[in-house]
Image (tube, rainbow, N blue to C red; front, side, top):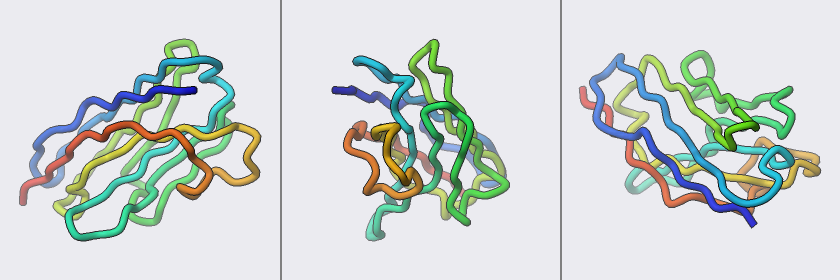
Length: 125
């Protein structure tokens, strides 16, 4: 069982940066793959970034490549999403996710069974 709490969302202007943080409680955080997805009003949820339990492999959606960076600190049970060059299209609620590190795939939301409550990111034009 893993509990996830996101923080770091807020209002930022186009071109700005935000760093989202996800604090995990529970057992064996280091054995979980971690990911971030987002959902904008009226749109389907989009899986934007993920990182393997070891930190040795990462995934980014095309919309996030070159602008977002996912990282983790297993000693602190934390996963971060650094978002740069933000655009109004990045406006969404961002959700942290955890899934078993034994999963063959880690780059889709189907590989994740634990989700946080979300944090709002708003990018103004």
